[in-house]
Image 1 (cartoon, helix red, strand yellow):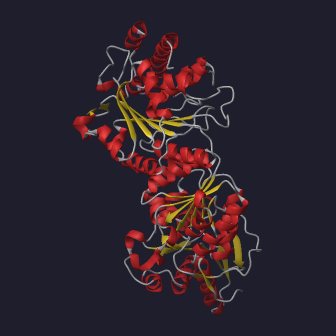
Image 2 (cartoon, rainbow over the protein chains, first blue to last red):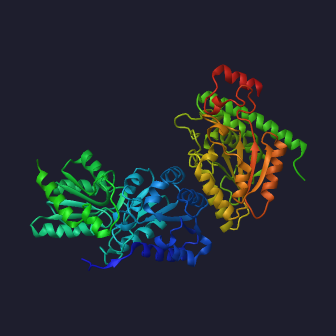
Image 3 (tube, one colour):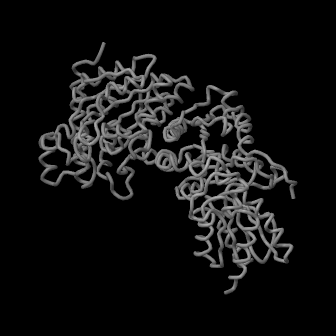
Length: 317
Length: 274
């Protein structure tokens, strides 16, 4: 178990882009006037000729990304998650996902921990709307190390992808990059037999904390890091349902259509067991500090514990 | 310099054949958009048979020019021109919009060689063309990117985002061609949401503008394309004055034929005229 160390995923992303830029001469990076926030500015300083600031025009940025990719470039396009997904969704659908172009949309400021900027800047629906697009890989890394693994894997994989990172520094879940990361392959963080918590993003660490609390009460909990929302590792979910008989999902996202929705779809169709979703309860939040918001809107270890107990109480009924 | 009289004759004949394909394929499919395909026919014909550096036998030719049909509903004109160029057999045109066909209702770049970009949701093609032009510049290719947009399509905000990008980057390897046929689905463009003064708008977005070009005079179309391709320091917008449904008397200037196929008797009449 790694010690509690806070590392910024977007800084990791920015640094990695520079490394990859040296290796891949056809790698181009785009941003929409947020390069100092998304950290693509590090690439911009190193490779100004392969960086295009599209200005405050996210829809245009996605189209430009598609045109570059259609010309043989590996394109990384970054902005805040709320704009990359919602603002430019049809552009992603028609100009990127449908023609399967090699565009990697790496969105920062995902989720409620975007904090003080409030509802307009907190992407709480992006996983749902992006995972509904055919051909688009959707990944929510658990920490900075997994972010590095994700970006390195994506640069080698042709095709469109959406990656969701956070604004604040987040605790490390992993100690090193060698833990067997593979796109589309979920990872078991802790073994257990009474219940499984399936989480993504920052909720992986929070779910591991919850698992410890439950363990203290004698409940054996399996925690799964479902970093890839699409293509979803259905096999891992079904196995967990069969072996533990109850599922909790945990995401820093609306409970509508995101990880919880995706897991529920698999469970309902394959091996129905109780499912309880932890996440934003189909409402808009507000401005506040990240931790305050997680607490007020029910996305803490305590909330995961409560959900687990509810799922357990429904088990076998 | 310029285009010879013989070449003009040849292109006019080609455009006639392409117009026949358009009405025939849409008539047979009983679905599709004849109006905006016919208004753009002379422009797209001139591009493929006069202006662009392409090789239908090598669709992926490294330094080819590219055409992006941003007004994707004019897919029939693109398909007819590609077939006549030799990208695929002309006989395949009859599969337009049929299940299992590569000739999708709107262009799908993965379905057929020669289609440079997927389009159909209006306003998106010009941004893609900007990306292609930027890529050409990065790769030090002198290839051009030609993008055809509609006047109704010019109501899309993304067109102007892309225009601002092209002007900012001084993309003189990009040529925007406006099919100014003055009609859209619900009526006259100027009645629905006017786009005038359209030349001034493109100028304001830092474009070199060639306007008042008769989009149905092969000679004028080719001359404008030559001028545009030679212009340095700025992207060029050519405003082609066109007639929706051009070439079929009962479709010309008729709003209804934006997205309505001809009936059987109408198709016969159209083919007689062409």
